[in-house]
Length: 106
Image (tube, rainbow, N blue to C red; front, side):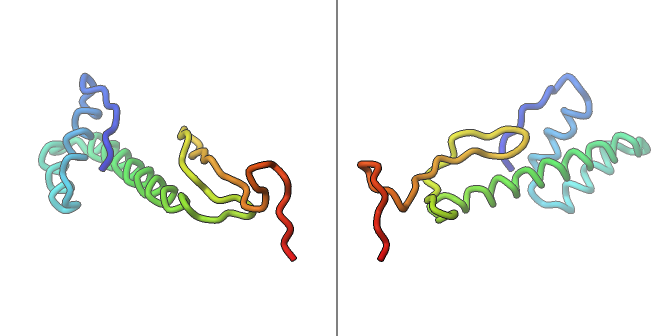
């Protein structure tokens, strides 16, 4: 799991931070049940945030698969930025040489 910026003064954030350190899903679930006790609202909030955190990690891993791939006329060279809506990549057109003239495909 990638590092996340978490406000540890907030009990939900502190619990989320601890839960993210547990790799095994069953152990993580048991830990949350034990720590949250009867506080079902806290349990559900942390579970929801964990679900979101793992979805974000999956998207990032899938995005990295684009590097080196051909997308239309562009070869994806590297990721140059990332934000809440996704990632931005540097691509190089494969149909134009370095001088800027268009290559002829006969």
